[in-house]
Image 1 (cartoon, rainbow, N blue to C red):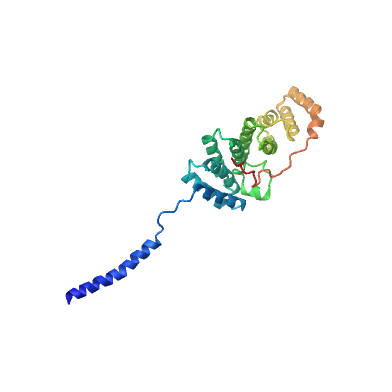
Image 2: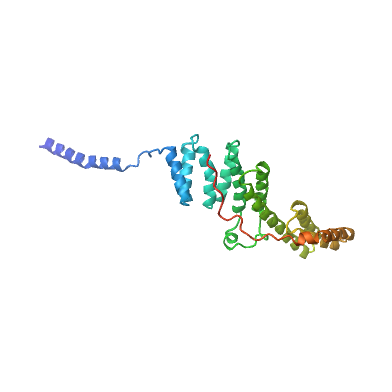
Length: 272
């Protein structure tokens, strides 16, 4: 009788435990099934066409992690620069461009990485308020604009015939005007506080480093006023002569419009 009771208990335990073990094994995630590289890439393309850049980034990052030496690895790295930018991740876009330049210096589409590095430098440093309301940026911190100016200038020096060169040239015109305005805002600040040497330094920077902009005449006048206040009357007369000689040319130059050249829009990389 005792033996029968023991067998019955064992039978009950087996009946209860085995189904649980079966269910547990069925419900476990197990190892994730690896998708072919092209599946990830095609999925990323469809997502980008649908402007679903967040999900496209996931697919492109999967290629970068799982197939670092695969057929689509370099193209995925290039398209990550674009996808990050379009998703508003400017810091990630800039870092991806830097990484691509570092790892693929001889890639046929390396010009795109240099170009987007300059674009992302500006937008990553631009405040939300300025983006939304398109406020005047000349009286704000424009360190990002200066870095963008430097990087886009390098891009044009390296790749003057690139298909992205006209796009970059337009942005450099805007940046030149923005940087000049910013320097003159600082010059006006110093003038009001009678710090004429500091104001003179700012205005001369514009004339010497950012010439032929809509702000050139304004910079010349600041220099003239500084010389007058400092008692450098001969130098003041020289600047007056320069102003008179270039009055028609500089005054007729159309000032740069406060256009948003760095909106959330950029060309996508060429497929290699």
